[in-house]
Image (cartoon, rainbow, N blue to C red; front, top):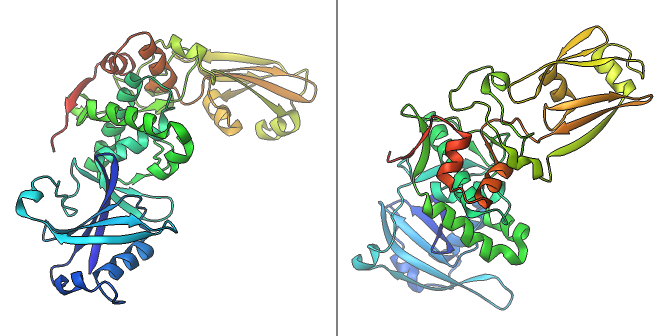
Length: 373
């Protein structure tokens, strides 16, 4: 009966579209609300068995790409959703409803999001962008920084779509948070933060970042050591828009400086050599972004990026002090250092830079375009 669904965030409320095959005759069901097998009960069963997360009050029933009926829900005393009424929609009402064709994919309207729960949720692209900006940017951040993040999130999603790659709600690239999670995260600030994020997205609707006519690899990180990194040092590929630039705003980030102590016993096993207070450590070379490229322990040379990764250091800009029992790694920055710095973007925004200037700084040689297909 119902073969697909999509939950969209429209006019500050969630709306559930239920797509029905055109062989089901449900007109008689509209007046039979007490039956155990009617349109009402089938909707309840579908919501309960398909893992639909829906907090709204409006449901649209779609047949052959037309919204044929609407359903409004109301809360009973025990806070359960109950059906209030159902009615066929008139043609003039249809003009006010955006018809989403779930078979029109990939598109600039709809994306499939692979949730960690195993569910594939189809949603509006701009709702996906909302979940990324809300998940990645602290609600207290300046709206211009959020706008920059919105453009990056949209660019990433469109590039994935064009390459027929999956979008996931959590990976090493982007973190998606839905409204249920954000309500818990933002608590009593939910309404104000939601409006701020929505304004950032609406202000940049359809905008993406391009280089030479193509969508860029839109990398970003939490904070850095005062400089972003050159892509050739991290990805082993040179991108003309992922080059090292100054990011002095990060020096005041709460995540700028971290210290990690590693036992000498563990470090000895990792490096396959004895590490103690007599061990001599020398940083042989650093990258353009001041990350450790090569480091020497006594007479052994190691790749600074590989060592940092194996130790789980938050950044590859570090200094080393060997003590009797452990070794202290003082780390500057948090993340790979490529592309936009979130704290750097917020610092720029607080100094009066707009989102276009922020993106131009962190992604030189790129330009903003509006994606239409």
